[in-house]
Image (tube, rainbow, N blue to C red; front, side):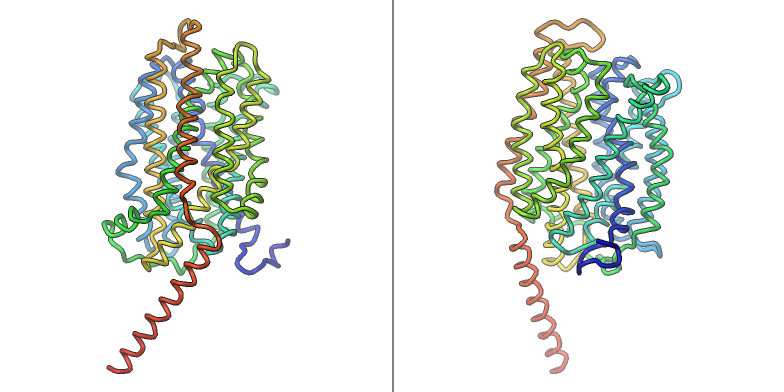
Length: 461
């Protein structure tokens, strides 16, 4: 369908294209933190695995202050450019330079280097993503159009995932530099330095902010009370956090498992590339499933796929490359579901909150969501790596069968428990397309009654 003939309520494809582009560069700068950093900073740069886990956890804990503050301020920012766009522009500058310092450090590094630049990286991430996600939630009030918006944005995010591995792999084949994890990390750092400001500029230029979302009157305390009393939000939030913690726990140890259990270090990037391509290709299929059976049901199918894939790690041994690819393929299919559907469901919850309270506080909701996600991911990394180290596993030394078994158990059991728990929570999530339509109709009638009552009072006065 051309941009000039859109159904009512549907955004132009060009608008969706511009809006989704920044997520490509944001993923370039964020994904390597869990994918590359633990491996490269421990094996190649000489930091202790336990220190790395604790530092990455501390870096995320700094968001306890920054996330609520930026969400609150973003809802109340008033400029001629809008209330979201100035934050995205400033956050881009912070994130691009921090990513370069983390991914391509010059000279020797120590714990302070990792801590300082990790804190600044996540500060930039917060300044971008909280206003960015709030902006996306405000672009449409249609149940399925929200999935379309998050789908386009997530498509570019997953494309960033693919590029994190494809570009270094191609560079290694063509130029002899990029095949090893540390070389790939340097290449990704350079890409983030260039593409973050470029793609963000296109989005800021090409996508308008909805003007009807420009006023917010609720105080921070009142907004917080309303948020945590929102049962649908708390169910969705809890389920998302559990599943996110499980995926982070597993991803923080994947390179270690591939290197020391399967003995396929030189092929890690190519294997992960296949995983991200499957994730990318499965996304539009999950979106179509969501349109047919609903968002909650689609989310539960994705969680079930994660549960099905997890035990496969326990079956892997030296040389089991094909089997590793099969497990990752299942993870890729499940991952194509997770973020896009969750964010679309979150936009529905925010819409109900706005109708119920009369206030538009998407930034505050996104801040709490972001903060919870970071904290639980930080806990996952901060717990997973030290627990692995306590079992005797050492990426710089010799590891026997018991240490390798501990690695396999760590990457399998805890994530599987978290995936199952997340599905149990989301099973109780109540919002569907019909329920959302009924609520909107009820709130519209309530507003009409209040308007009539107010008009009658003015006439009697």
